[in-house]
Amino acid sequence: MMFFFVLLARIFQAITFYIYRVTTILQAFWVLYRLPESKVQAFLDSYAIYDHDWKNQKEMIAEMGEGYYETVQRKLVDYYSVVNYLCAIGDVEKMYIPPAIDLSVSIIENQVLFERRMAKDLGLDASKNVLDIGCGRGRVAAHMAKLSGATVTGFNIDETQLDSGRKNAARNGLKNLTFQFGDVNAIPFAFPDAHFDNIYHVQVFSLAKDLPLLFNELYRLLKPGGKFACLDYVLKDAYNPSNPHHGDLLKRTKPLLGAIGSPTVEEYAGGLARAGFNILVSEDASAGGHQAPLIDKAHVWYTSLGLWVQRLVRWGVLPRHFQTLFERLSDGGDAFCEADKLGLLTTSWYIVAQKPLA
Figure (cartoon, one colour):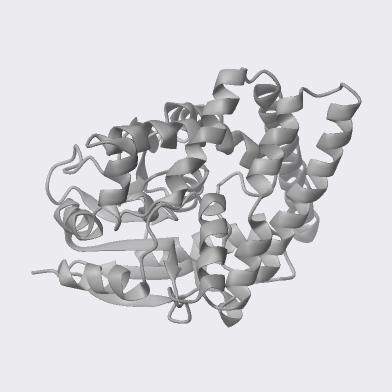
């Protein structure tokens, strides 16, 4: 009898998830269908910021002026206010390729596996006050809040995504999840000292123009003994900036990742240590150190969908900008896959750090 109820619960869960995905995809299609030309063009123009790196500030000032960060900030909003809907159509609504933990299951299921690990490593429970930096549509935050019962605050630069997160939290009755506007580069953040038990982010800090300053801010915000965890994009030791092919792969991959900075592992983990943290974990969370199988899954999905979009545009069913959006989104997928296979970079570098008790 117990087996029957467990099976019934799983079937209900699967049906609920299927309905959610279909509804989400249809809603995303409808938003993209009605997208005005000005917003499409702003999205395409936003990709220019990914040709830069925070380390080359003089170059950014030369192209965008002394107030270059205001331009970057505006273009980030132009980018994320559209790309979040494009991602919602596929398996990357959470806007990240997870570590390749179990290749027998989907991208979404690998995301769940990773998030469970991170929640466990952080020690999340109903007593904890948690900050999700760069929360996007808030789907990771929702999973963390539901999984652990912790009080989670998500903050993000894009009000479009914050609105999606709030609506999703309300639908799921997650009263322990709130969202607010925040910019990762607007330091100090609007929270008091030692306010959070835990802080985490997923593939956000390439958008931070001053990592040491940000790491000091994380240290300020955490309670003594509090933990920070992240999954992020880094360059690996095999990357050679003097190798033209490596440089070309990086240039083609960065826009796909939405990455400006390209920190090394030492700059990341070493920077946290210099800010006062004890590093508990610093490793590639993908089995065998490669995400390529999952990257390829996502790339094949969007490339295949793009072919159907081309046909529907040709037949007059979809507006022409649909084809433009999908071509722009999927461009660079092959470069990302090759760079991962060569061990040049990863978006699955996992770090857990702890603020000392005293």
